[in-house]
Length: 295
Image (cartoon, rainbow, N blue to C red; front, side, top):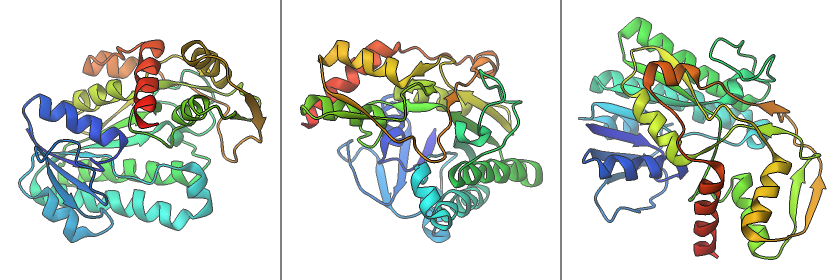
């Protein structure tokens, strides 16, 4: 495979690049930053998906594009929805145009946020799409463009909807913030009452899901998830078991936050053979060890 990973120097993207290189694939990265974890084994193009020419140059000669570059913050999308749509909407359109010119397939990284507040759980792919944040709207717009390019141009596209991803190299994620504060002897702040539930999935499982989706039939969308729910309070309890006691306090609930988000992974299991392999305790332990190495 000759792969382009947009956002390949970021959190999920860098783990995907790790895996692709370990399997002997040729990898190009398009990113606004340059974090070279690979000692020159991957070609890194410093560029922006919001700029069509840079995107097309990076895609030249590849056969598969894993599109991970995105604006991923719900609060930032509420503060600046125009910036959010420029990155997630127009940026995705630029990636699809680059793929069309390169005759490459696209695996688009989407989010559970496209579903909005669940009408039932676990949420399957047939659930109504009713995003409540600008971020969810922009990710759903990207999905719509993927489907339109599959229908109108015959482009091979697949959509991977992530549940809540955690693991090393993601210092902004709530799990890492909890870990870092606990290790530093600082209190951790739980948004709201801590009863909100999430389908936490380890980044290495997400990578497996992306690679499985690259073999999908065109135009399909899949939840890449564990199918299991964990509350923030339960998560904090697991961290106390790994790290020891630390101070906890509750802050205000986040605007636009969803109370319970759990995705069904049945379709990905049936059609792609995907199953999350990492238990949360094992994955949290790896994440804690990484956080210690950064202290």
